[in-house]
Length: 460
Image 1 (cartoon, rainbow, N blue to C red):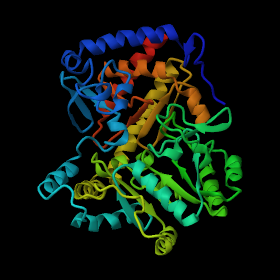
Image 2: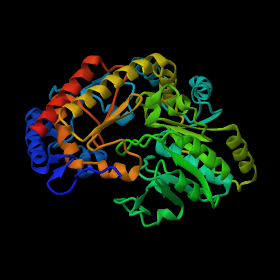
Image 3: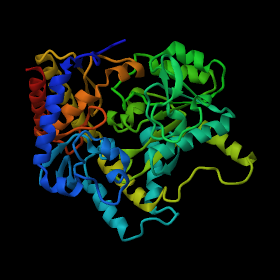
Image 4: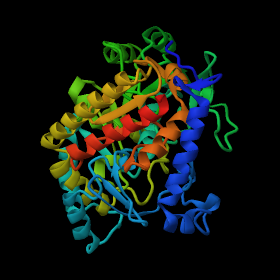
């Protein structure tokens, strides 16, 4: 297993004392640059539980949340006038930049025609064929979040297989789907630590194994009691873990042999290309989910199914007891989603845009790697398309356990705030950086320079 020194006197090769000094000085600089924000949100936003509209806004490592005035392209401006080159991009929600012009135009057009009415609009006529053409599966449904889409797809999988269990990979992230909130601890399955109000033993209906472990996968499927394997093509919400050569081929072969369905969740790996990791690498899922960026920042998600799954589900529906399926949400498949999604698919998620994103991501990868080498840091860089991540440990990583060990929250928090103070924003919970079509070469260069400045301070 790859390891890094997170105990004793250092983290990721950097002394704890130096990390603490960096974080303290950068926190003070952050506050100084934001007097208006400090006055308005330094003690929390009035009326909100915990002082924030969503609890994880308090998990950003900055002394208080950045109060945004506006965002355009790949730049965020706060109420104090500080401009940030945005490489977080809403943790993929705005992967194609803030308010892409085609999406903004589509939203304006639809705003005067109604926002939700439980019926399709003409844009829906275009979206179904676009999804089939783009991602290779013939039948689709619209939801509002990837969590919803994953939950609904898993319900279908259980319905048509008659099996209760699902299988996930240690360290995975599929939104807040209950049964995916399991982990391996000391080799055994447990509920993910920190779950609020969860009294059930989720491991009764979910198996969990390590990513890239074909032997464990075969053993977990041998009893033929797993309805569906739900998988990210690359582990992304931890320190990034890329698949071993041949792993996805083995995953597909073994699931078919066990009559287990395969769900590929591309919510983060859509950074790979216009058809996601699935199209670029020829994966053959039975079910497919894509959330966050599919509508250019408007909350929306899609889930698709193969001919076989659709036919089996139709057979199931003909025989099941009448009543509510448990899949829905009234605001899903609304005309605002259709308008934004059509504009994104037709005009934003283009091969030309992805080619540009990929070129700049390669430059960022090389630049960060160069800095790591220059300062003799035992860190590494991982990339999947336009998604780049620096990891404060040696690599590459092979599974979720190694990713957990490589995570260095104190060090990463200090680096994050130091980058913000140099005008660069990256994702707060892992060191993820996204390149959008709006990102410029100058912004990438500034990020590399800022990263080098921080590395120099940490190793001086």
